[in-house]
Each structure stands twice: as C-alpha cells, then as structure tokens.
Amino acid sequence: MKNMVIRASLKNWFQLFYVHKFPAAGFKTTADGAIILQSVSNDIYQNLAVEDWIHDNMNLENRQVLYLWRNSPTVVIGRHQNPWQECNLKMMRQKNIKLARRRSGGGTVYHDLGNINLTFFTSKKKYERMENLKLVVKALKCLRPQLDVHATDRCDLLLNRNFKISGTAAKLGRTAYHHCTLLCSADRFLLSSVLKSPYKGIKSNATPSVPASVKNLFEEDPTLTCQIVMDAIAAEYAICHQIDHHVTLINPTDETVFPGINNKTKELQTWEWIYGKTPKFSISTCFSMVYKHSFLEVKVDMDVKHGRIEVCNINLPEEWLPPALCGELEKNLIGSKFCRSEMTALASALLRSCPQDYEVHRRWNLLYENMTTTLM
Image (cartoon, rainbow, N blue to C red; front, side):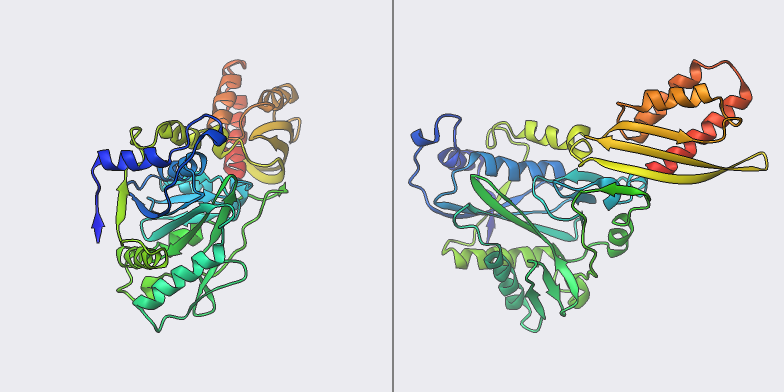
C-alpha cells in the first residue's frame, strides 16, 4: 500500500519530531515507532539534503526512519575522497553526469534510476548496519527465494558470492544513519567507464575506493524492477518494526515540511563543498607536445589544498616559450581553483596582456590545451 499524505498532516508529523534550535534538555517528545519515506525527486543534491535535514533536526531517540530515494545519473564520492582520483570528470561533463560529495565516508558510487538508495536512521545507540543489510536480504529472499545474496564482513551485499550489488556508508553523530545502494538495472557500462580515473601522477591520503565486480538484480531476474524491490524492502521494514506498510512520499524542496532544507541543498552543490573539501594532494605529470614537426616534453608539478593550487611548477624548454610568460602563468595559478574553467580564464587574461605575437599565442594555446586535458 502506498499513499501520499496531504501536506498538512505531513507537516504536523514533522513538527512533532522537529528539534528546534533551543537547548536539547528543553525539548521532549513521547512519540515512538518507525516511518517509511520516499523522495519524489531524482536530484542528488535535494535527496542528500533530506539526509542532512533528518540527521540534524529530528529527535530519533524513540523514532526510526527508512528513507528510499533514486537519482538521475550521478557520481557520488565519500566525504574524504578525491574526485580526480575516483572518476572521469571529463567524460562526466560530456555526458552531463553530476558529481556530488556526501557527508558520510566510504567509496565512490554511480547512481542512476536503475539504482535504489536506502537510508536507515536511528539513534546512535540503536545503530546496527548489519541488521539493516539482513533486512534487505530477507526482502529479496521473500521475492525470489532462490537468489544467492548475502552480506559480507565489509557490509557489502554480494550476488552469487562474487558480484557486488550494494555498498555501504554511514554517519554517526547525535543521531546516526546507514545508507546503501542496491543495483537493480543500472547502466553497468557507464558505471565502469565513469568510475575509472584517467588522471595520472596524483599522490594523496584521500580514502581510495575498492574496485569490485558488479551485477544488477535485473540480470539475474528481469522481474526484479526498482519498484518491486523498493516495495518489498518497505514491506519487510514495516513487519520488522510492527507498523503499517505505508510509504510517505516527500518533496525535498518543501520548506513548510523541511524548514531550511533549500540552504542545505545549495551548499551541497557548491564548488567549495564538492571540490574544496578534497584532502590535500599533489600531482606530478608529463605530457608530450608536437609543434611544427618538433617534439617536446613538458613536466607539471602542483600541490593542491582545499581544491586550490598552492604550488605550481611548469618545466619546458626556454626557447619554446618566454620564461617570463611561463613564470607569470605559474604565479597566477597559485591560489586559483584547480579546475578547467578557472585555468581557462587565467590563461586568456594573461594572453591578452602579451604582445600580439602570433607564434607565442599559438604555443601558449597549445600548452594550455595540453595542461587542462592532462590535468582535468
């Protein structure tokens, strides 16, 4: 059974459990039980904002929440990861695939509408991710008893003992949540393509993802659609928590239900959050350029902190480009964002300040194109 509750009743429910910004000791609730929510949005930033809102604002001492959501094509990196190490940003730009950084740790995942996301909210005391995974396995077994699905010690779900169908991450604070993916009918070719970084020479202490062979449930049984699987998990959750199998549909942009949520959504979309939170890293790379039948090697070394270039050294033959011009580029890149658009703007501005020398301009553009292609 699935119902859309009217806005007024949903608003009243959240008001009952909303933790206002006054001392926790002054806030009391006698409510208990569990609830199942499902987002009507396929926008990754809106859906992640719901997680943040519930984690930050709801009193879950006597309340548990299952949150179901799906996204349009997106790569989601963990809180402490480096996007240049984890994914193919150039391909993502070409295919209009979003990049998001979540608040929890763990590895990088690919989302599309063939992937289900499940978030289990509890108090920190009641947090138990393995029990959540057992619930998912039980739901799948209820649908298809012959399925060979089990949870591993790493809190992944494997199909046929070899293929990963679900990965896990979590955030523990005043309240806790455990979220996991579930591959039903995702684009596996795109998944494997965008989760391969083409960028070389990066050194970082960022959390690396662990590669794994994956498979869709749909490939094992074509009747296992996202909707059927979500309904089964919701039903199993309802049985486990002794509640009605009632899924409440939510709109993540509704400020009357989630006060302040749009600010959370905006923050998750900022360059400062997605790229600026990348742990400090260095990149050392070489590339070759061919110009008028001549061949030359260029070496670039950079240190990047908070997504901005701290140190920049570009080594190339002095006779090929005026050293002063190359030095000016290095100087201007320091402090700038490590991103294609900012490098383009800086390079163009510097070029305009140079004498109108056609040969220098051609060489400059060639250097710039090779640097951005190799680095970003």
